[in-house]
Amino acid sequence: MLKANLLLFFLFVLGMLSGNSLVAASAGTLLVIKLLKTPFLLEVAERHALEWGLLFLLIAVMIPFAKNKISVKELAQTFITPIGLLSILGGTIATYLCGQGLGLLNLRPEVMLGLVIGTVLGVSFFKGIPVGPLAAAGLTAIFLKVLGLLKK
Image (cartoon, rainbow, N blue to C red; front, side, top):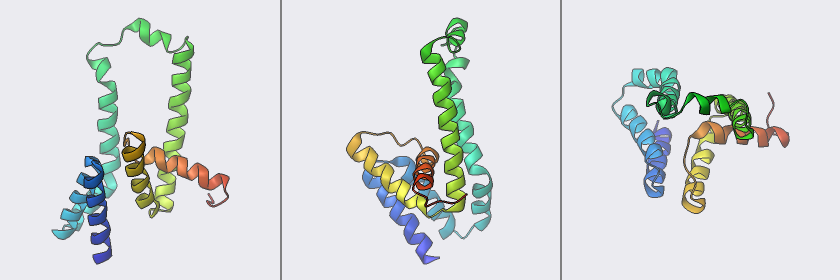
């Protein structure tokens, strides 16, 4: 119990120091839930948080449709222009990577700390944007498979 609390506290501090408010808020929320001794909230989060997060991410991405900022002509160009076709390919590859990442996180949850530290480094030194752990975990899963360090 103490180890889990210390790890969450470390992730909270790391998020705060790096300016990654999402990491800090996530770790802080889980730490409060644990300290309040409400395991049922952890169970609810474990079962539903990923879907909730994806729901809000998709809502954010689809807002231009809801606000009529994209015309039918622009939508049609998705299927006939090089940019549109490459965006479909990019979406397909990213979705595959995220699926691989979810598999890795289920199989080896301990990689999350490395992903968070890598995110902090990317934000701090390379002006990256912390978009979430699934893509990073997916890329890590591919690296591990290529190196023969991850079995299916």
